[in-house]
Length: 402
Image (cartoon, rainbow, N blue to C red; front, side):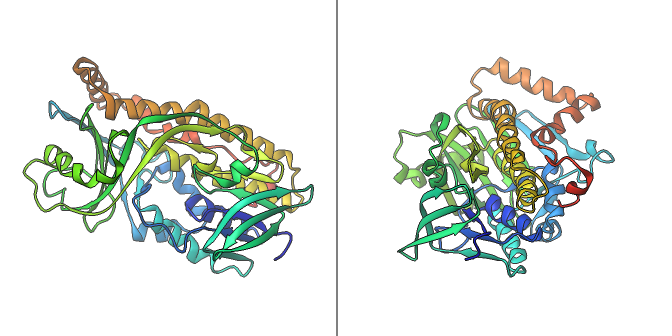
């Protein structure tokens, strides 16, 4: 293997898109993925408008839109009263390039990015390759791995850990994962039914302390994501036995809902103690993990990607000093800890833990007020842009490497 190769642990969207960005810049890259194929279980599926410019720069936007669909509207609904408020991203038209969100399963985006990555001879993906340890020197990194079950040693110039919240790269680099774990379990389900014909909008935030949920359309073929939470002390083995109660309460009178997949998982509000340890860099859930209410986890990971591949490519090409990677680590951690994580926490508390009817009504009144306050609505809709880090490169010439 080329000793100048950048190694990336994890073939999720952050890992594969970062690899694509580096490959497009002419940097040799190898992705190490412990699975045998792209993970298809229910995961992230909404891409905020603010991330779409980056997908376009990477050359995957058009294919992603063809496979998914664009959406502008949101609905907040009080489960107990049935009261609802709807508004949309139309208010951003003429102000931003992409005034809509993209709905697409993250596995589909990964597949699209892998197709693009396959166009580069200096890029490869090693499936069934589980990272077990990391060591580094001043000039490179070495990864121990189980490749098809056999021990292997893989060397490179840099290592990016994009291997999820349980990141072996992070742990092997001596970095802690500071924060807290929620006492609830999230259950993400992929369900198939024509909910729009039954009166449901394409995205609904259902507010309730018992039946709170996010219900959102994934594909034009009537595949939807319904995500609720339950007490983590309940046996995870019997999740499917408890699902019918939620469906009966939330979708009364609707029969024939098909469950095509589900994924129960723990929720965290955590960030690595640093996003850099020498020649090891962290991105996505390996660097930070949040509950998914509002889609801020993947949004944060994509913004990690966009600024990281550009900065690392510049360092490797000797167009920037490696202090730019320290700025990456500090700035991306600050954005997550100070902005993304608190916002996701507020979203979770509203949707899943609103038990005071007066507080719920106050929130609904505030949302209704935005329908008459265009500037206030625009400020709210612009929030995802605050999670972005502008280019860390200092000159116009460097910025053209994006």
